[in-house]
Length: 388
Ligand code: LRH
Ligand code: MN
Picture 1: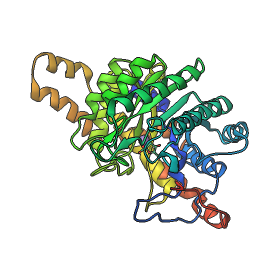
Picture 2: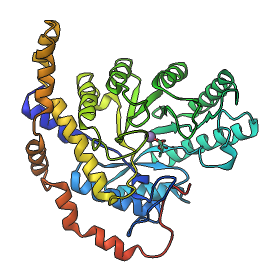
Picture 3: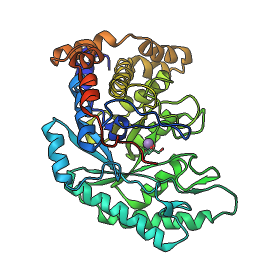
Picture 4: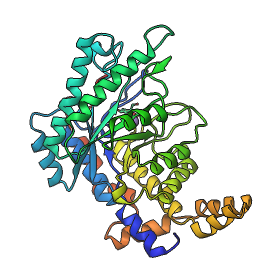
């Protein structure tokens, strides 16, 4: 697809969902560093997300995390979002921070704890009804630390029962986005450790259950773009949690640690029709900005996804297919590397300028003085964070 105007149309239409928790304080088990001006509530998080959308024109949706974004009136929060030109995106359930969940949430040996966990998932569907969100994102920290600690098949049965009950509750336009993770916080088994397990559960559930690929949740060296191509072909890719990492679930800015991997992923997305809105792939960021300024970090991440997408859209698919069919290994690789080696920043600057945006979103944000404004205004109160 090297038709320049079609490439620009696709880039203009791209939408990236930002995480409410990306605007709050976060860290590691060693330290959470506070920053001046950090939001104290979901309303302020949305105000910061609106700055990202104003600067990039490509981030009108914000994912929420419950209870980190718990409010009295979710309809009011949704109206506040609309007032800022935003929309509430995925609702992330949280069954990983309660003392009751030490031995698991929906897979816990104790039926009282399983009931509590499922009730929270159902509460998140109620919140989706109130905010107009269509996506229930489920990540389970459930797992074991030692061989023999619990029975894997029994836990899979408990997981399947819980998912089936939640699936039953979904409205017609609502769906489950099931996220997998290889390890952490459990270190022997995770109950949804990989794409295969997530895919199998989603197949069993039905068409409203899809898989989320968090780019930080794989063993080092995993070919993530293979998983993406496979799930797209099966119509089971619900979305991405984009971030990047050098080692484990580092949750660094998308594309920062491995821009070539992000390009390879977006190449499979483009090639398998994943950019088309009807494919329903949610392009979400899931990151933590432990030491860097949060809003510019989110803007940079949106730009990194846009750059990877632009390079993927510039792949000469005709030449690629011809070389592949001819078995010309080097020629095929060259076609892809030509696209990857293309400096797409001028093209994206052009797309932004034609949309009436500053060609440089980071400069646009700096010019607003928002960082100083919130540092001066947001004094007192309790800065938002993971509350772990
Ligand atoms: C788990 C995860 C999940 C979110 C959390 C913030 O590691 O990727 O998507 O609930 O991060
Ligand atoms: Mn994630």
